[in-house]
Length: 96
Image: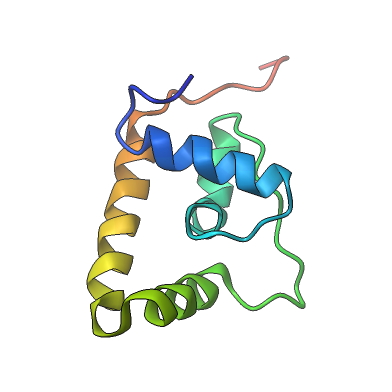
């Protein structure tokens, strides 16, 4: 459904993982953009206050997998998230 958008594959993978309770790299990226994605009508769960931030968790996961390249990959994923958010239409709640 979203594959044609920039970051569409990231969105689809992240949504699948979130629905299964998996905090994968794509899922963490979506959690970072959760508030804005929810304004676009995409169901992203709200993190519990006791959770570490999605930003910290994402960076830790990237560092564990990629070491010194973690920051570069983190920045690229955030850029991809912003491109995705900018490509999505804003869904207005009914009654407006």
